[in-house]
Length: 333
Image 1 (cartoon, helix red, strand yellow):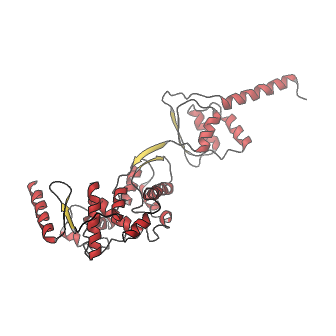
Image 2 (tube, helix red, strand yellow; image 1 turned 120 degrees about the vertical axis):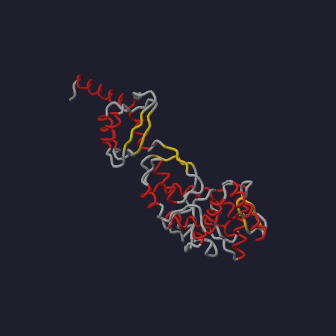
Image 3 (tube, one colour; image 1 turned 135 degrees about the horizontal axis):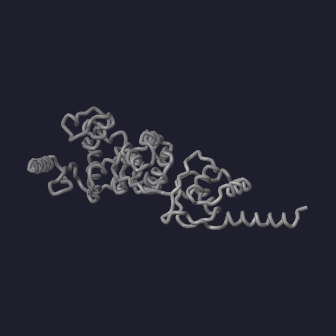
């Protein structure tokens, strides 16, 4: 039988364990601490690192409690921020729920697949080569675009909050899911009503995105492309030439007449219709403009000295607009 002294010791021990698990412990730094727990680290090592950072008092008590509860494998890796005082159980709960520190990264409209990977890598979200490899997996969009060979056009431009150490596959899935949410479940039907497949709408939207930075112009540029597609006229979109050159690792500068003759299915100066795939990730305005073109008979547009573009419905007016633009360019030299 346990004597009175033994019972007292056991009671005191239980009280101490309860106190260790439930009493909040302030972190040593006034502005908090950040603790990185990499993937593959076991629970014991995680708790040791938290102790070294001053987040918990006695890792042995917490480890024993986890073993008794069978929750040793529940702690999730990641980067964690600790500011306010937390008890040991609150720390365990934070790690079990994976409340990792999130960092913002902005992906602007008009970046292509490789540029998005480079932007993410520069912000500390993995290796660009590994990200590009993940962006080649089309599993996430197969149900909406079975013809896709990669995720070009579907990596939605937006500001994201991501954890350090996130896998390239999860990042790709996050960007694609944002595209689906932004466009909604009926985007394919909107495309069909405009005489396009969903894939064709995304391709067209990517061209619109690269042609103008002015939101008010996107629907008019869309109308030009729709009119040319209907009339069997080559789209002659300069950004498709640039994309064609980049795909072949060619140096891209100011486009020349020789560039416009570059032999590629992406070069809309040589081929009729849309290129084989998107040339960048378009924003929501361009995606909307692709399936809701403005009204009108315009067939041409060229940069205007006043800013934006000058639109024309016949070749003679377009050539005059081109001459005015070239005179403006020469005046700046």
